[in-house]
Image: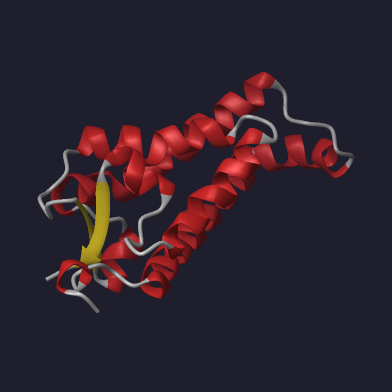
Length: 155
């Protein structure tokens, strides 16, 4: 490992952190959908390949982002970490290994990718491309490049 990338988080720890974040978010979103009746409202139509209405899509987006921010907002703002990253022991910094402001982290690193991924066809390709970028020498996903960030081992 070269001196310049010795602090970079490995691909597997980053994957594990993302999986932890995803599982926590999905379990809680499922619980919210069941409690509110949203699940019963949308599932019969989704089972028949009938898409969500615009209103349902907006509700799902807003609730998902609100929950993400409730779970991770303070950790991101103070430590550059999500719950998964904190558990695994990695954090997000800029390319000079300085702290990144919350607005930049959320708007560029997370929200930009979320919005683009909603575009039919383009979104699916972007998600694949985003993941594949991790296999480069710098171990930076597309969302890291957009936000000017890297993920390092937390000390």
